[in-house]
Amino acid sequence: MEEYGFYLSFNNYEEVIRLPVNPETLEIKENGDSKSYTIVNFGEINVIAYPKLTEITIESMFPAQYYPFVVYSRENAGRLLKPYEYVELIRKWMLSRRPVRFVFSGLKQESAQEQQTLTGEIGINMAVSIESFSWKLSAGSSGDIEYTLGLKKYVFYQALGMKVASNGEVKKQQKRASEKTAPSTYTLKAGDTLWSIAQKHLGDGSKSKTLQKLNNIPDSELKKLKIGRVIKLS
Image (cartoon, rainbow, N blue to C red; front, side, top):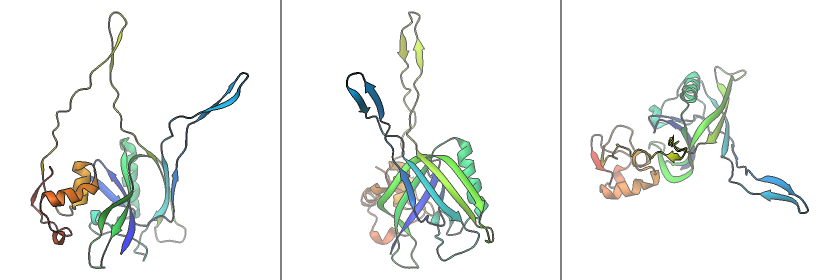
């Protein structure tokens, strides 16, 4: 059986929540940034520029009780957070002034007893900024919170310092090389999946198949990886 999951994560998957109620629709806004000019003796022309950043709007609810349509997350040990816990977590991420990651992904579950695992067929996986977050207590409910979340695609960049010489010449300072080295191995912890490890350490969850082949992990062990095992990343 397949279904869809909506995830928000912060600080390289240090904190992850799955939206407990899938929104009925996912509004994605793609706009260009063209400008029109009027040329004398010629008329109006349109100059095509780079498109604006993608905007995503999500409308759903944080439930205060267990409804049939509520979905659960392994990241939260299969339990629901309280509605205000979701609110406080999103507010904390906004105040950090750092991007979060939004993932809209297919999930696969072969039986009710088996845990859900992310497939490689991801619909959306992008860094975003939280531009707006409005919420209200649902009328007539026992504490459910309705919310609207506005996200905008975030493009990572690094500003380089400029140095002005005595002769007035402006020189760009060289980017300092990173002193960090990527780890070559990883020790499995509770709740790990090859997809989450590949996403975090290789930057692409679909490379989970590469990790599986590299470490000779049979398909039968994918749903229950051995905690404490050291696997090779490259």
